[in-house]
Length: 107
Image (cartoon, rainbow, N blue to C red):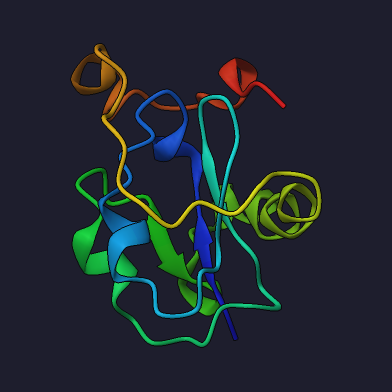
């Protein structure tokens, strides 16, 4: 079972989580991160590091966020791997906690 990045990461894109990932399972898009379910080793390090509380164990993804399970898998196939922390967007704090950001996702 893998971890899943959910809605609250959109427009926040904090990358603290990638620094602790021993499997290099994170992939980066323009304004969102995803976890490759084939690479994730279920180590439980990334959720603790996510300042936006956007990462869940697949079995614990909130019902309203279940579409992100498939979205992570799909986007991980096309987005590049990210292994180093980069600065968050300047307005990340403004977006943290805003609900239903899926319409802002840039693929």
